Image (cartoon, rainbow, N blue to C red; front, side, top):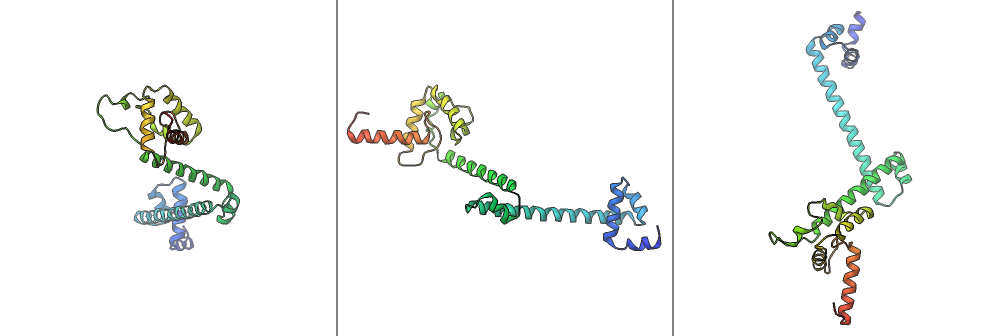
Length: 210
């Protein structure tokens, strides 16, 4: 190595750049140290510095992405369309579309969680309770709280052949009186149970037999 070249490696940035080139070419740490006229301990210190610098850059990129994502979500929540959001944030409309889809999935998951938490449950009556004979027993109950039409149809189909359908529906109707309705019970959706409750109330007001 020439004197001029050796002198240039006193600049840490140049030395680290040369170190990376040699390691990328397959040289070992000791071989790279010998090539550059530096000690193995200097190689290790430079590698530690390079790893920390890369970690810092990765953290900055992640923070930048998180900031853009938060801004996209804020603008979408404010009612702006995809093109306007993309122009404001400086990203593609496809990126905005993906973030919008993610936002919808999060909202759906939150609604599902709220629905399951507020849904009526049969009392713990021990062995022999009607809920033990329910057709949905042992199945993935998220199906009964989905807002997707096709999934709801699957749940309702299971309910149609359930031997305790009437008891399940009665539980829901009593628990939901005057409150929010979630999920499929007795094969009926929240809207169908609301309509059934309204018809029952109208019949009671007219004095019709139940």
